[in-house]
Length: 501
Image 1 (cartoon, rainbow, N blue to C red):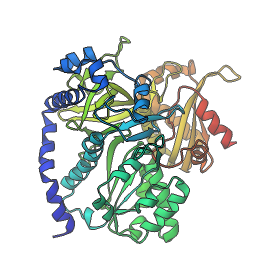
Image 2: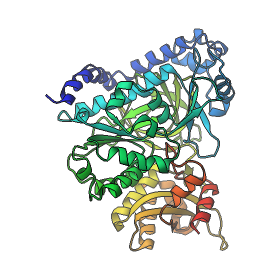
Image 3: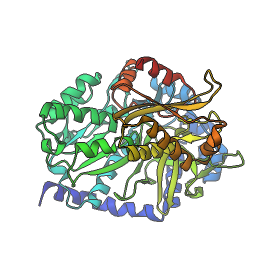
Image 4: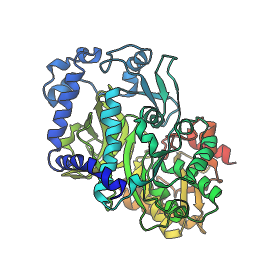
């Protein structure tokens, strides 16, 4: 029996336990809420909001307000300076610097011991458990895991306290045994300079028996391109013949899928999406044939959802058992990291409620609604995928923003796209994108009617490397940093267009 065959037995109890997600979602979530409020009852926040008097969800809603980062920022900063028992019991030593925001202000998300173990590492464990369940012939543990991470730095110079990318915090605190099966070495993984790190990772991994890779698709692709340059091979399986899975998350995989499939041609290759953010680990692709993800309900995360689909203009907040498939929701979380009814900024759409499965539809701040069109990232991904299929193009990175009025008094959407394979006919690509957006978004279709409100969209071709150059200029190259996809104003796109000139 292979090493993976022996190790996989360790995951069998959890695989059976996860079956509770199929029909006990409400029970699991009520148990989580009870645990969280009881555990934090004696914190400053718990006393202020009478956690001892909370015995059900309805009382929780009455006692605890909805929070954005701005409401919790003061408490978090005090925690960063060493205060204890503020939002969660004890002292919190680690803070994930979030790049999930569309503005330049950094967010410092607390990562407590319990959050680390019962949310983040729990998600990593379940990723492997579900993958092995779906792939019983796997040889995952018979080789190395190539795991990308960011970097960290001291937090206010407090002893043992760190701030940085979540991935760096996870690597810093990982079980030492895991370092025996991962690559690169810890010193390399935590380097701050991504360009130096990229080369070192590629060189360290080149001769290893890599069976699985994990990371953000854009940054992993950059590392793999360097591996190919160093190896001189045509396909990645020639370098790592036992490579079998890419665990990916952080950004939508759709724009990158064709590039990965061209780079890795092995029929044994699998792709598994994870929903892990600085604020927590929330979802896993439990079925390889289904692009939606299973919402993880028994971690230290209690979920609520604000309905953004309401025709009346009202946006009610409901617990998990109040959601309906097909509606667009903003997600709120309460966690053992001290986030309470926290607006995470992501939007989701449920595809099933038994079990609770969903797709990420976008971000509450990543959309274009300059003219009532309500264009979200999910629409954009569908439109680009269709335009690529129709024209043979491949998209690497993109962003889009409104043109409120040009010199002719015309309004439109402007798309700045970096192609790995440009379309032969850019005008055709733009038409196909525009038509698909109208097909998937009735509000956009209405605004495009007879070109009255919105003119046909414009596609500007970005030079190779533009988005990486912009991220580098912003000090956001590597780690978990992302290109903002849709913006309701033109700050980012104007910076990019200036660099593109």
